Length: 197
Image (cartoon, rainbow, N blue to C red; front, side, top):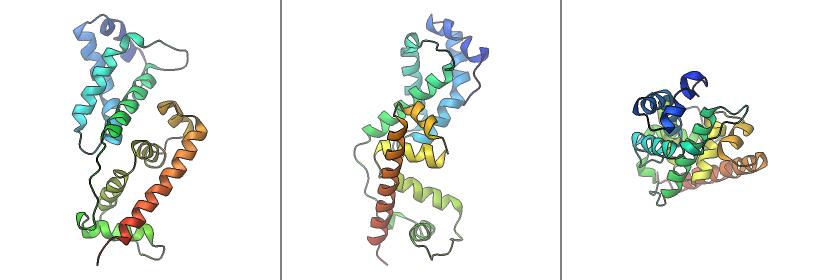
């Protein structure tokens, strides 16, 4: 997350007034934070720049609604807006392509076997194969399940941070994470069982 301070908030009044220079400076200051969130949470079929642009459009459209609160930096408001926009985009991705064994490479198949079999040796396949497999499996989950797994397990955010970003209660985050992990394991098992030698 970008550092909160005068370098970010100094452009708010000008951006609210429609000053192009202040708006440009605000975009430049917030871009690294927003693109990081987009890269973590974007739907498979949507380009990250398109989603980042959509977030900035929403940000400037709602800038008048932002009210400074004690202890809550502006960048938290931006993060929450970005996460919710990504979540909306994930929900809009209604059709999920069918994931088949033939879609996986040899390395990904080895990682799948390793993830589901206690006795399987750690594959010598590159780590990016494991990341690709995880992405394929996550793409099959609902937007909410994918989001909670990304935030909790991949980005290692705390339950409190996820609650603040999503607006879900802490118990809801824990329950959703538990159920999402079960669904992910079920998907992986079902996928493995459907594999033909």
